[in-house]
Image (cartoon, rainbow over the protein chains, first blue to last red):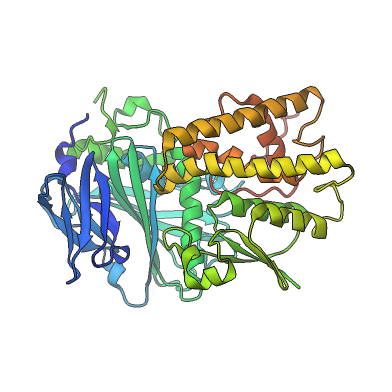
Length: 283
Length: 218
């Protein structure tokens, strides 16, 4: 499917809010459209397209968001992003030659940790993915995976020893995904790590990682580079996935029980009719 | 005196230093510099350390070195007790080390640039850069296959030197910039030989070799 259809009415990140200074102008591509992102002296962000037409714009979760269509809803909420005491960390856009949906799906996968993020998010021989719960929450129309746990040698920059990390995954929009994980210095809270993806086209995207953490000790540079290390380890795997688009026909790949979140994500995309970046043959 | 590295985790040039320190089993303090997205390498604080605004920077007491090749030479001469990483036994060997250190810059300027373009959206003429990158890899391939005929696994002789460390990262990271390894079998074999070295460490985009389980006993 090459037409954006439903996909064009979603919100997508077009800039890091803090880096769009007054008077600055950034040009970005969203679904093959060039957008001009600016901020006026009063601090208001604006987005215009090729024809100079103003596009929808909002600022949330550390980013400026826009759309080439008409979003029917405000952007999803993320209350932890404004919770007192959290450090908000912009990790920057990284370009990936892959479908935006594959980037999101990879973020939801736990089984690859010991092999791709060796000695950081996983380690052999601790490769078993324990059973966890997955649901499509109809009230909010989101995919959630809960009660996920995994042994991690260095779950966060603030973790010095291996711990069993508890995870929850949330997919509030097809190109946005959030994980909540054990916060080593503050056991009662969960750290928030999000990945917001802007499709340049169906097989190329910019991925913005963003974190809201309880960690007052680690240097900002170390937090950013920890996250970049993880994401760039994923990137070289993502760019080698075939086919490049995410297959929605269940017969095209053989999932295992560890892939429950991925199965729910694909089913949810199919149900929504979100086909941008998807391989829909057979569906 | 203690070693201190100003580092960016995604930089192949910084990785040369991290890798060599690991291979030497040499401790070093590390300060992360937010090259992307913060552009901290251009900040006044960093420019005071290195006016050129480049990474890596290594300090050892009063000494500040701002170039990965210079750092490799320094570390080899000062901290390599084996004396094998920078052999200066004869004129030709010394010259060849210089040659490959210079060649490593050619890889950074071509393959490394294509990677920055593809990964962080830094502007460049991508087609010309990739073509130049392939030309550099072909040169490396030709030398490594000749070395193979001589029974030598590395760029200079049969033991690794700083020449290999200097050329390894960007040769290995080429696919990150859309330059595939398919046409370079001798380069691929050499990349695996380096990843097999004791105390080898990986960087994002260069994965470690996973231990293969022993064959099951019949």
